[in-house]
Length: 154
Image (cartoon, rainbow, N blue to C red; front, side):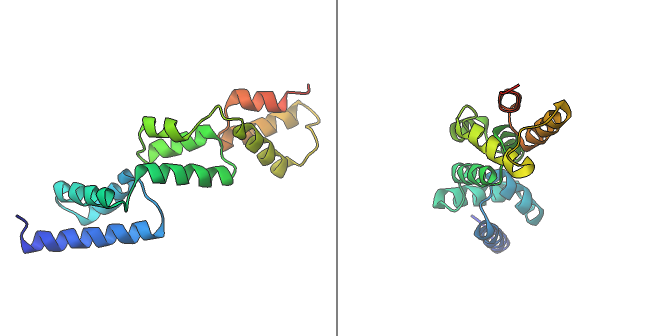
């Protein structure tokens, strides 16, 4: 049974978590990290996180789906998105479920991203090709995909 202090602390944790989730989706790991400063008892924090998940307020699956969609819209590739999701505590199985690095959509996105940055004209020389390759690698596209896109006509 919880005492009055524990009930008060739990209510504060719940309210803080709901405020965070009202701004944007968070992974369970992110919420745990952000809320741990407010909570002395790790068991209480786990109870609150379980409650949030059971009520549907927090879902790693929903977070993963939305995160991938948002990062794709900003022109980031599957390699970078995978690393970012791992940093946010998302399981490898969940990442694999939502992130298909073999999807042809990635090649289209790579082309759009490259054209926005460098225009429609093909690279003039090797230096221009490597500059584009570095940019696309930074954006998180796989090396083989970059090679097939940049050096397809040479």
